[in-house]
Image (cartoon, rainbow, N blue to C red):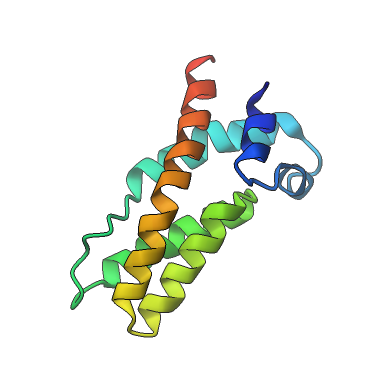
Length: 120
């Protein structure tokens, strides 16, 4: 199995992501394994955020949503989109629940990306 097949199994819309980059699979892989991995390491969102002051969480979740959407990393795009919407609507507990469910999927996706990044 290769990188794109493993990502497909995790719900990533690989074909859509490649299409967004003009059909260039090499650029798509590079964006995922380099830019996206670095961005995700810089924008960590933990579920134990402060219920009173979560503006930083909204900003990080919004950045992740955008990057995931651009690369069609659908499970993360959907989860972080929901987190952003819930927090903007003053529902931090519900956002926390979504985040807790999304983190294992995120870890799987990042594990696959990091595995293939190390092979370079």
